[in-house]
Image 1 (spheres, rainbow, N blue to C red):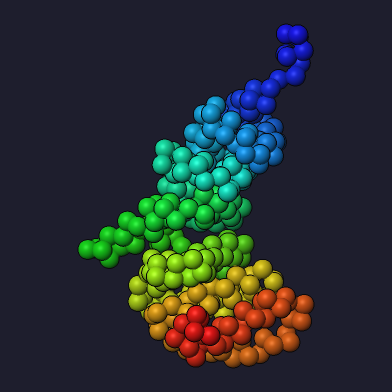
Image 2: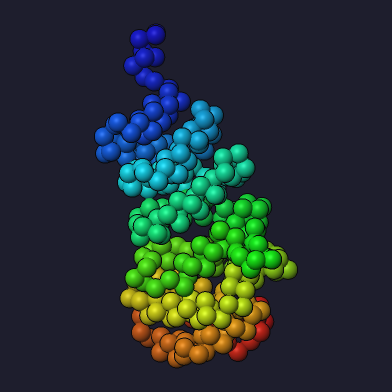
Length: 300
């Protein structure tokens, strides 16, 4: 019986072995990445996700993400595991944020990846950050969209990061990273308007993010326009959703910025340009056109 148990280790024992392997810098990089890939498959099951937390796996996983000298492939895969681990598991999301400072770790890792222009790590870090906070408003309120230094006119780390990402040109930030940032922010706005229209913290997220900074608003609008005309369907959709979130805010500066760069002409000329786009996307384009003429999208 004991021999059989040794031959067939339990899933918890496997989780422990995997953790030992991916945290050991002396192990070959490919082996560490493969260990993390297997871990990613395992923690997709909610029972094993909690088992991983029980064996204190969150801390070493986040230490890999946080380690600036860590190999990029390992760091990126660790972010992927964290995203899977926290996705839709609210209890683990709260534990990771409250007990292990996960939001700050991921923000710092994302900022570093942006500085190094490492799109792979940046994209995975953003994926992990959005998985951690997308479904829990408290985490967004406490860890992402607070901490502004009003007296000194400084935004919180997260707001500064998101704002900088949206206005960054293609030479600075990769398309996949920009698209993920745009989707995350516009999803928050759309969901808030569907659930709690009086929640200005999130329904007016774009206005809160840019705070009447006309230069930044114009730069972000130019990026939206540029990416709306991209041949990549995912990029077009992300830019359209972000455009609606911006134009539909209470701050007329967004509407004026898009008018100043003739975005309405892009919307008109879109018709028939990409016939394979979904009907939902085509309706979205019409919503943006009407938002130019209305005070709010809800009045349409």
